[in-house]
Amino acid sequence: PDPHDFARTLARLGISNNSHVALYDASGGSMASRMWWMLRWVGHQSVAVLDGGWDAWTAAGLPTRSGDETVQPGTFEATPRPELVVDAAEMLAKTASGGALVIDARAPDRFRGENETHDPIGGHIPGASNLPQSGNLRDGLFLEQAELAARFSELMGNRPPSEVIFYCGSGVSACHNILALEHAGIGEARLYPGSWSDWINDPARPIAQG
Image 1 (cartoon, rainbow, N blue to C red):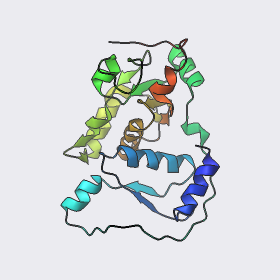
Image 2: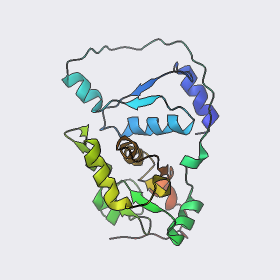
Image 3: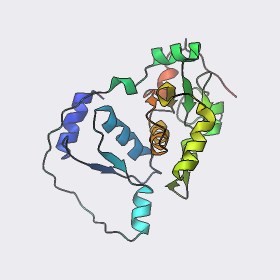
């Protein structure tokens, strides 16, 4: 979305620039991670994701309630961070030059171009490595920081996180990898928000399978 439109939505939800935001979901953390990334993208650093989400909260016997919540509108001014975003043109240039490590967060079969149920064309961006976001979790919780660091470092080597670009099918599950990378203490990577669904919109862009 437009960052300033998104900021107005945040304000309607009661979020201000000085708010600490805690996020959760019931889908393994992918949706909460995407929202975490979007808040960071508009300049909001004080945001966290609940490890284990709704399932962990309820399993711990913590309080819940139903019904709508009433909130007072907040005041939120966006400070966009375009350096966190890669578009298709930059992705094409980076993959051609080898100027970035590109990591696909989808399941291995979709990466190979098999069992594609979301997009009309299966495969991956040529030169990309596959690191499924599901591997960041064990029993629904994030791996220990050292385990996460080892997982990413095996692919990254000596590359700084600023030279790492994550993508997935539509820019959601890739954010789980970006969050895990930061949780591991490695730093901020970049996102191709349009991801595979955007990439295949132009038949001139190369694809790889297998």
